[in-house]
Amino acid sequence: MIGTEQGKATGGKEISAENFAFLQQQVYRESGIVLEPGKQYLVEARLAPIARQHGLASVNELCNLLRAVSNDGLRRRVVEAMTTNETQFFREPAQYEALRTTLLGELLAARRSPRPLTCWSAAASTGQEAYSLAMLAAEMGLAANDCDILGTDLAEAVLERARAGRYSQLEVNRGLPAAYLVKYFTRQGLEWILKEEIRRRVRFQRHDLRDSARHLGPFDLVFCRNVLIYFDHETKRRILQLVREAMYPGGYLLLGAVETILDLDHLFERRRVGQAIVYRAR
Ligand SMILES: C[S@@+](CC[C@H](N)C(=O)[O-])C[C@H]1O[C@@H](n2cnc3c(N)ncnc32)[C@H](O)[C@@H]1O
Image (tube, rainbow, N blue to C red; front, side):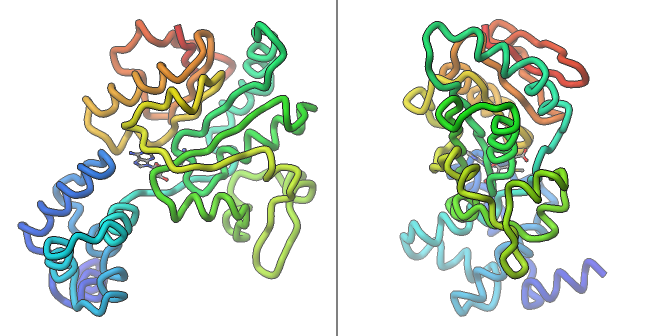
């Protein structure tokens, strides 16, 4: 079955070892993402549509084009196509519960002067994570200017979708409480549109996690979830250091369920809040 799908995706021409290695290098250089050996099928499935749009018969031909011309737009599209943008509203609910019961209150109380809480969704994808926080803040009675939320991602295509705040039925079915759907969305045809009162609480911009984020912060709260898994050890370490540099001491970092702070205990203190593990910036 997979063989048949593979054949369809690539016009019957499987990606050569040389071209797979070329794409591994390109994707690593442009995003830090490690394409493990054995991911040829994924590469073919994701890049065959781009090859077709350029009138090319296969991903091998797309690689030839990438080598032959200096086309930043095409290179970026190829790299973006290799990112995994899977996300959902209120993913890992225990973390939102920790924010609601404990962390947001603590962070608000710890501010030295009246200023908005600064929050960063650091691999925001299509925006569900940042908007979940915005809905939670609204539910807790925080005004829009009490809580400044920034969503960033490497991929422009997902940021466009995040800014639009339009979601399919399938997307709102995943993780979003029905009461929030009714309260904060309006239906338009087959889509659900997030109301302006929540959308205006979040800004989105492009940022590569491998670059310094000092100019974006400092932040009280950072979500850096389900993205470190795509990087090698050194890149993970470097990104965690850069994230820490963009945080207030005492701020909180939230990671994905299988992600950790590695050996960086001098930068973050592990803390359990209810069912959630969170990391407090030292
Ligand atoms: C699986 S999604 C995670 C979405 C959300 N944080 C969540 O947990 O539901 C991973 C996101 O990381 C982004 N990404 C990958 N490499 C990146 C990099 N070097 N800098 C910034 N974002 C990156 C991808 O574009 C993708 O949207």
